[in-house]
Length: 204
Image 1 (cartoon, rainbow, N blue to C red):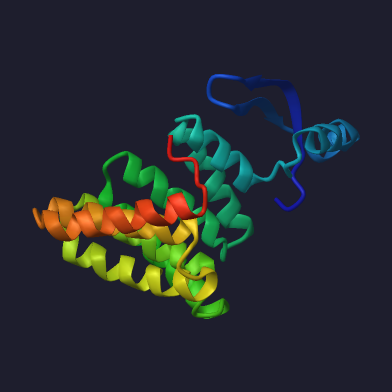
Image 2 (image 1 turned 180 degrees about the vertical axis):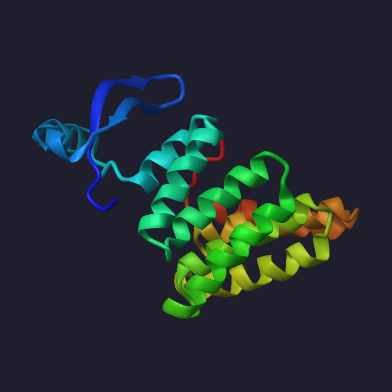
């Protein structure tokens, strides 16, 4: 339901994982007096506590079953939530359900292509997700097709010297590495490294 309020039972910061851990209880309409408490923690954390953000948080914590619940709830309220489809894809990929992940990633891409510029960074992210999934499936040529599409967008948006561009080169290097084309892989890895050094990216 739009504007759902959660009672915050416990909030703590996990120093080891560098994430906020939140124990929440979904409240009924008669508990909206808790909105002040909700707003306080939202300000303290610097993040809106939405169904989507809770799904992302739970996914990062490895609570995949719980994350799925929040992603699906978000999709009930926002059927065009590409981010929730991506979240579901990430969970599926983590579980080794590659075909399921591909379905969710493809859905997110399809929706973004309808509403965003062809060179929007979110579309590049969709292509990378698909590339990773196809790579996990062992379809490295297919993965490279999507990495090439992502690279084209990243270069247009950011130019050559940007960490996001370097990471695409790294993904491409990994794909060629898996294909046993080691010289080509090395070229992509070297390109990636050169860019990261140039932009003073922390590679430690």
